[in-house]
Length: 348
Image 1 (cartoon, helix red, strand yellow):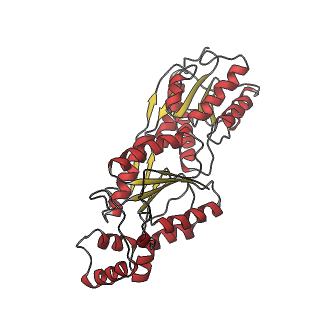
Image 2 (cartoon, helix red, strand yellow):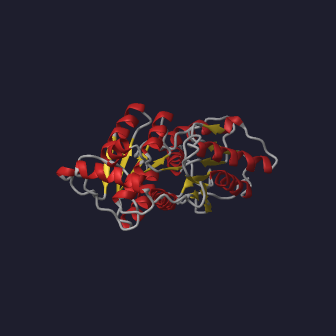
Image 3 (cartoon, helix red, strand yellow):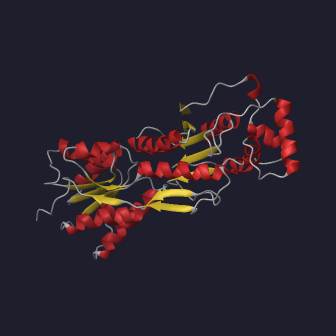
């Protein structure tokens, strides 16, 4: 498991080795209740306050420096993988808001392995994290339950599967983005429009596919299964998927790649075959990563507000750490079609 710490959490004092989690366990209360006592909040019953304060004094617990009013000092940001510019954009948004609030951030990758997830949970308990932001990652139900028992606030960004019912979620309008990408190509006269899809286990992939299908059906066309090839959001799968489409007896005239990284792979596959974008093939991506403005040609894509999703996730988890409820438990930020030079009218 890769773990990287962003920001700072002061060195451990000899008397601070006991964690808030352990204090909460011994006192029979939640972690937020102990945090309220530590931060001098008034909304704790006198009996509970006395029990917690006795344990704090007994163990010589020293409060970690916190930003005034945030109710948190350290957040965990957890990805499945960190090998994509997409993750960097989320981190950029998280760090901007966390830094301004004086809150440290620990960034981890669990690689979809239960052993890594359990190791991360052990580390989380040891450092007494004040909140967790989970990005497109799966956690076993037992680990979700452990977070609940520990009283650690959880926010899920771009949920991979069915989100925990008690965790706020933040995502993008993937369905409407998939529909907008396909409608743009239809408006240019294309009818054989292929899709290089994302992993079907991810909700965002399925939503983008559903948007693609809805646009085709709205134009009186059905989905041609031969024009839908699998991908994993990485460039290699875009390269392979594009080659598979070009090998068809009747190749498409346009491709919607469900991520910018796959679109870049597709551009390379076309280049190696001596085909030009958009003269021979129109291409639309999804994400609007910074580098696609400089691809050859600059990529038409669906912009999803990745950094804004990270920013909202921090604001939400900090509200939960203060025992405040978010304005909405389910938030979808809007997506936007950005037209550049990789799409053109059907040549026929």
